[in-house]
Amino acid sequence: MDWFTAPDYWLSRIVFQRGLAGLYLLAFLAAALQFRALIGARGMLPVPDFVRAVPARRAPSLFQWRYSDRLFAAVAWGGAALALAMAAGAGDAVPLPVSMLLWLLLWAAYLSIVNVGQTWYSFGWESLLLETGFLAVFLGNDDTGPPVLVLFLLRWLLFRVEFGAGLIKIRGDRCWRDLTCLYHHHETQPMPGPLSWFFHHLPKPLHKVECAANHVVQLGVPVLLFAPQPVATVAAGLMIVTQLWLVLSGNFAWLNWITIVLALSAVDGSLLGGDDRPRPGAPLWYVVVVCAVTALVLFLSRGPVRNLLSRHQAMNRSFDPLHLVNTYGAFGTVGRVRDEIVVEGTDDPDPRPGTVWREYGFKGKPGDPWRLPRQFAPYHLRLDWLMWFAALSPGYARDWFGPFVERLLEGDRDTLRLLRHNPFPDAPPVHVRARLYRYRFTTWAELRATGAWWHRTLVREYMPPVRLRASAT
Figure 1 (cartoon, rainbow, N blue to C red):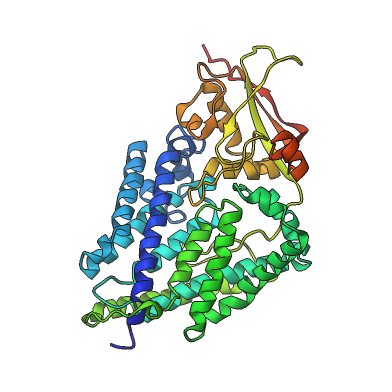
Figure 2 (cartoon, rainbow, N blue to C red):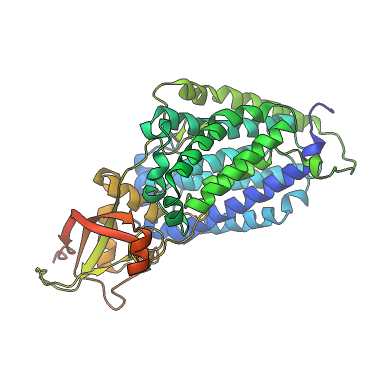
């Protein structure tokens, strides 16, 4: 069946699958290292409470039938081990049906985590990893050439990622239309990186060029993915360059890297040298399965297409509980100012104006004005990201901020491991409070004079001092 496979994409298939496995590895590691404090049995939003309230049909997951921290850890660490093996080429060392089963296990394990992760797993790149991972199940291995239909579905996904992001911008904040959004974005984005300060201070005409180039790449170039080669390869290359620019300018977990991996699947591998090894034709059962999956994905694409055409386009929405076909987009609105929550504690049993408060340090989000932002992406610091949303509005933190503070007052080890600095290493504080500060990047002159990357000004109290309630006797 010469029509079914595309042998020229053998290298693209390998690079895509190995890269995807690497991203799975990071996702499972982040789950294994952070879950106890976030969604564990004693976490801020415990999985057992969630599954009692949400039926399995709305959030299918292994943990709907049984949950324990030990089982969750086994799934997360087992997923990481399997992802590492797939990144090393295990999928090409086994027969095609076994390879498909291994990819399906990765997808099912991560789906089980995402569907009980609640607000900690509400980001678009979770659905994007699942949708991409589902398609990877059917891309084949070294036993057969990659199916044309699956390669098309990967381009269809990449098109929706880029075009959806472009539409949400051009329909959203006016600054995207007048090309001024990047006057603010590098400073107000959720988690700046080590180069964000420098990107912010680029000349304003260059910021306008960045904006215009973004519109071209997200609104014009995606259409070229469906053009003949080498046009599709050039389009994919432009997307990769744009995503690498975003990688340098901030921390967006694995969003940029999975977009790069998707773009690599559209690159014509024959341009780098052919693969002359003879392969048997695709088995009939495989052809039937791939055709059925293609029909399913196209059918489920109705919701995302309607969303793209809607004037009320939604960002990062799943249309089915399995996250098979989703809609994507980011930064339809860009903040003009940056507020940050600073969490402090004291061992003073009766806080007064002269009380000394000591600040907790977070790994990724801005805190100490003299600390240069660090690079963490593609690793995802879930608490730090949610702290950014909490600063936008207390409503985003209604469910978890109180439990977070309670665990600081208890000196909970799992919660403290999510932080960079615990100012109370010997005993937990008696009181904890939170204050809202307005942050801005310093100027070149301020940096030279003070060595500070940020300037901050107190805005208001975010949460008054609280302490643990006395135990009932």
